[in-house]
Image (cartoon, one colour):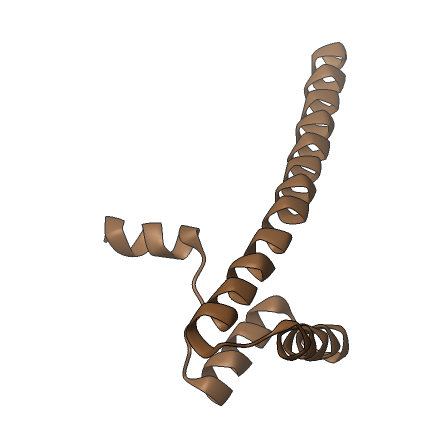
Amino acid sequence: MSKNNRLINSMKRMAEKNRQENIAKASSEMVPQIYAAIAIALHRTYGFGYKRINDVFYESQRIWENFPGTAEEMIEQCEKETGIVIRSNEDNLKEVVK
């Protein structure tokens, strides 16, 4: 039975490693896409050029790096400061299922 437990534990470790790698890969692909969409929106909607968009991105990076809380706390802070509610697709799916 201990061989089965070792096999199961090994499979669980591999699955967790794969999950973490998949999350990292998805993040590295999605974050640039999100920034690109925001840059296009700022340009199309407000006529922002390279410098203004870059200034916004620089400030967002500064806030990100210096924020002392968790991701959830940053999302809450965003809502408090701007009134904008940020939701993940997972949160949206939970709303639809209710």
